[in-house]
Image 1 (cartoon, rainbow, N blue to C red):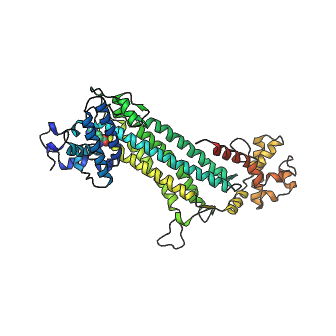
Image 2 (tube, helix red, strand yellow; image 1 turned 90 degrees about the horizontal axis):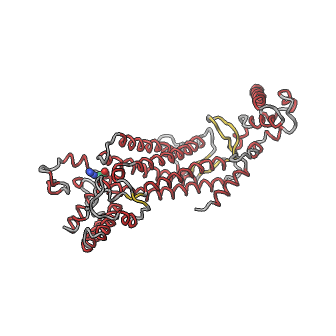
Image 3 (cartoon, rainbow, N blue to C red; image 1 turned 90 degrees about the vertical axis):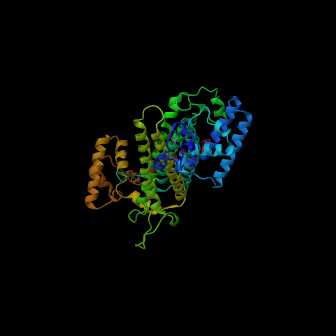
Length: 461
Ligand code: ARG
């Protein structure tokens, strides 16, 4: 039975909470994952209360000892999480009071669950962000490793999924490195805004008790404290920001995976994903499916959903705390779990990719991938680009009609299209030339790519 005496807030109530309301409002089944942060936060709060003379040294010792005992119980799996305790904050406080009596009852002075929950989520999220940064930098390192291993491998670059211009595979891989590098940077910037200490904002107005918020911040290793109690208890912009950053990261991983899905088809055969990272079909014995890549692609949508859930939950909330805010946690936890597992498995899978260099090279050489180079050749001979474009377009149409590749045309044939063509055109029709001539900064030439790898490797961190 959940009698009125059992609730810490039960004083003004004459009837017990309906069971269905307890079940409906409870968040303990998911916010229990915050237990460690809740306890650490409470210990820091108790230390501050005693330093400020709000509670005695003895009470502090009793409270800290009690909280440590609860921590041990939870970690041993012996703590009973009950829906009638509502959330992790009340469950721990209630257990503390049951264990320590009056001393435990002094802990909640100068704080509220409103600032407490913000503190816990911030502590949780800053830890998770650090871990995600770590995984992303491993993923980046595996791309660099692949780029070095595939040094010299050429494949067609695509636009509209039509063969466009040949590029180095290393250049392609480094493109993802750049995207992930920005994701990492965004994670670090988001971390700064998460890493702000809200405790002491109390319910919404601050507290009349002589608390030392900066001291709590030091104990909990926060570089900064929040400056407005109403802002501190009511906003979850840091949650939304993190999920947005996670969404971008998912989007980047999803696009890489999409390429792997396409490249591993029988039609492309550019890459083989190792057996360990593929699955079979229950009916078709020949199948080897890129399910991991597909799931990463699919899970990107799930993280976007988490973002929309939080943004929508926030948009109409009157100041300050409203219970709607409890709905931030499941999307946040889901986004954290999803992005972590995806980045981790992608990092492992990337290390087990086998690229088919011959297939890639062959594909890069066909499909008139050098047409732009032929146009640029004419530009170098003084032909206006628009005219060169037309000339080469006609050349391509001619080749298609005659069912011949451009490199096998005779010089006389070339010259029928433009007098500017000379013997040296044949050098421009080589795929290696097409790649290595792209020396503009950021282009795909081998020199550029090697320099960028050197740059990246030389970076501190
Ligand atoms: N479980 C609540 C949450 O996640 C904690 C804060 C409850 N505060 C309140 N005034 N009911 O938001």
